Length: 289
Image 1 (cartoon, rainbow, N blue to C red):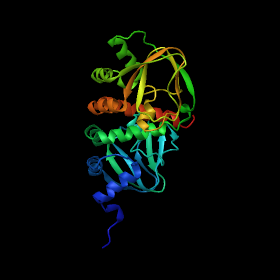
Image 2: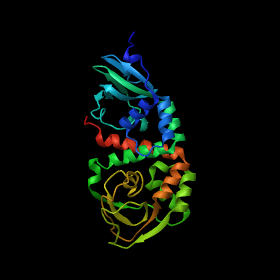
Image 3: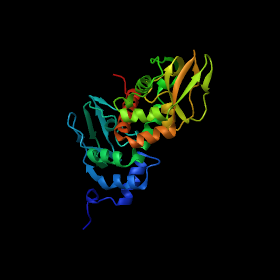
């Protein structure tokens, strides 16, 4: 007797292939992919079925294998549902708005429990880093990154408390993570720019981010989540805009290696950064009301 295809289990190789193809997480190590595959299960849904009901707590996220899915967020169709290369953009953002996921013609999906996904992010840093790089790369394509705007530093002194205050201001995802901020401050180097001088030109490879201490500079017009140049650093992109001082200016420089070390040491900090990146991307591509 021939079995219904909906009852067939995916092999481990098929699960890993589906995860790679659907998520596109470059750099995720084999152990992390194996962990993701081990918690996943295949599910088939008949036409006109609701997979996730609006207002209910999210217990799983879905990766589309075949068929169609429609995402409704706060009563509006989300147009990017079938092209987003994430496990779930709204879960990553800790988005609390009502979300409904349904299928019109039927769908075959790979489902992953949210609780297990959070554990995998904590236990496998390569997965967290891949999400950060993927989100940052997509953030750079949103319109807000196209111009420069003046930025003034709000900290006037150079004491330890001033430097920590500057880091909290320049790295909003790190607020409340005192140990991580202390580690970043210890590894940061202070730099000085004269009026009109440039720290870097557009097109230069990104090896560090900077957090302003005193003075003013022209930077990318964006809601900076990771200092000046931090999103480009996470995305592995070249400098999109130059950094020029409009008056004598000083800042803390944090190298890529130092930032990655701190993120790997502090999972809660890393998860807050992922959530902020995902929320910022949602704002950047959200359909008009």
